Amino acid sequence: MADIVKYYSPFRQQAFSVSWVLSNVCNYRCSYCPEWLHAGSLKRPETWEAWLFLRRVLSKCRRDKKSLMLEFTGGEVTLLPDLIELVERLKSSPVECRVLVTSNGHRSLDWWRKHASLFDMIILSYHSEFTDARHMLDLCRLLREQEVLVYVNVMMLPARFEQAYEFAQRLRDEVEIGISLQRLQADLNRYDDAVYPYSDEMRRIMLQFRGRIPDYYSRLQTGELRAVDSEGQERSVDVLELLQSGRSCWRGWWCSAGEDQLRVDPAGTILRCWCGQGGNMGNIRAPRLSLDFGSVLCSRRFCSCLLDFFSTKQRPGPRLGSHAPGRWLGPADGI
Ligand code: SF4
Ligand code: SF4
Image (cartoon, rainbow, N blue to C red; front, side, top):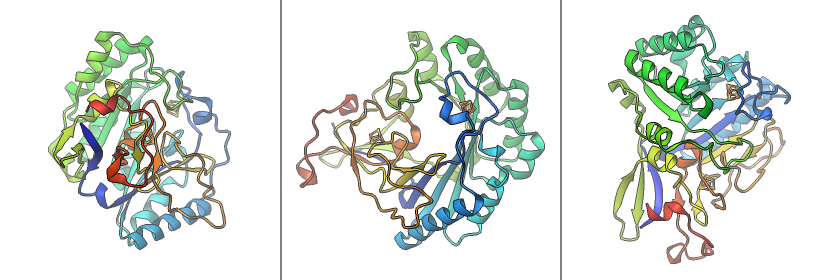
């Protein structure tokens, strides 16, 4: 039985992570996407405001002797005219920065040809209601040729499951690239709400499907999730299996989200993590802002975002001394 679940990676262990939803502007209107994520209704930070906040993050990293893992996402973040400028500024900082971007991939091949190498990783999402499959295949081939680290998340809307699965198989056949079939939550407004009702066969397909990982992906030094028991014995845990099987629950455990990672929403609100546990921690525009938040006690039914897996989870108990015991231990109790 695990007492600690921790993500081990040479880079991550020394990094502070920030996941920033830079705007809620998007050119798609996916049926499963909450309005707030694509309506274009929120005033996004000006370039100077965004850079001011990033400088605060970089100062914290320097003070703590940490590197920075920054993920820019949206909306559709590649629509923003100053995205490239912000990434270039980060890359010229003395703090080691890795920059990830998530995108629906709609920008032209020329745009990607010019800018893709700036990013340490690109996470593309295939949305069956809107994505031009031909363009996505060409883009993946281009990024593979440029040896860019890219993962493709294929969004598995049950009503379009066959179409999305066919695309994923075609992509795997044509391009050596990382692919994941993503189950979708029925209501993305509610982080820990149940997923869409998938059949057993659909769940089996999503669980077993893998892309083809090229050798050069090893340069990202991706790590692994490990469970540590009370004797200090460690074993690795399959993240995808945990996520797909719905056992990714640490309710009643302490979680280091806020200590080693932050999330910023399109209005500039700072939260510990994607689940929002612990609530609003301030705004990037605040004249005075501390970025030193402690651990938080998890009360969520699911930990459903991969980025939230990077925070260390620890079972409350005697080893933690002052921490109150958890009221309820979730399905991950059995890992
Ligand atoms: S591409 Fe992403 S942000 Fe845009 S509508 Fe679809 S799910 Fe929402
Ligand atoms: S749901 Fe949130 S608080 Fe709970 S373990 Fe995941 S990241 Fe931590």
